[in-house]
Image 1 (tube, rainbow, N blue to C red):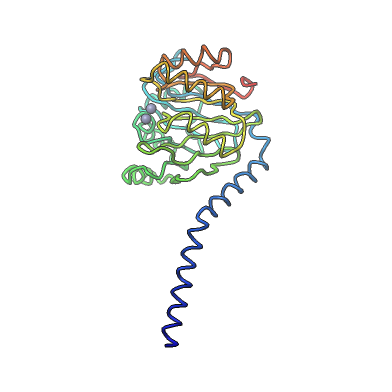
Image 2: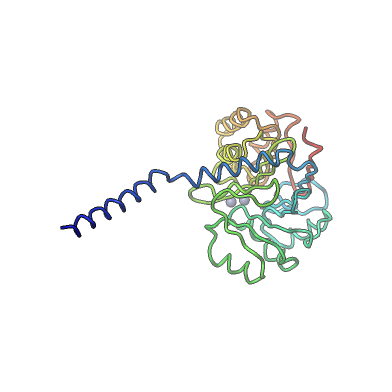
Length: 287
Ligand SMILES: [Zn+2]
Ligand SMILES: [Zn+2]
């Protein structure tokens, strides 16, 4: 009899532990958020000497640089020098980097937004020049892709949750249901810069996530907005959402489409940035 009561007590204790664990499922999330906020406070000043150079885009900007479908840019001035996406063709990427006076060896970190070839196709060519980098990829990337990166002896970081990449630079974490994508968020002394590859999870959702994560004003949103086939009505709604979120500057490029670029320019006026291959944006350009 005594043994049976002991077993019942043990069972009840086990149930209580399981219930308690379910009752506080977000404890680690809360801690993560707290850490992010503390870090945010500590680095509130942000980067003040940032430069973004677009080295791959289907939209032209600077003469002499090649255009091809895809996106890639280089971020300098933060703790690390970062290559965000690699475009689709490695020879175009490296050629444009050379014309922009950017040495592949100067890159410390590569961040790949999502698996599509127009963002990852240039990686092998780049790694042949400089394998000594850490590559941040969405965790959902295929094993074959990750194995290829490891064959270059490059380091790989699989991103699922939002994370700090280096001082003042964050990944939004894997967003979206079908095509998982991470965006880059840079903390500057003037506000947050959000860089998107194709914005498959939805550009408004991405900007909202960035705001939530780092609790700052949005200085600039640039990259592919994925509005190539969107209706005027949908684009207008997105522009209104941007205005409501207090986005100060926009630089829609790559898969944003001509119509969206024209409408954004109309509404943002001088705060619209014409982004294309060879465009250089510095912190001084943003007030
Ligand atoms: Zn794309
Ligand atoms: Zn894509």
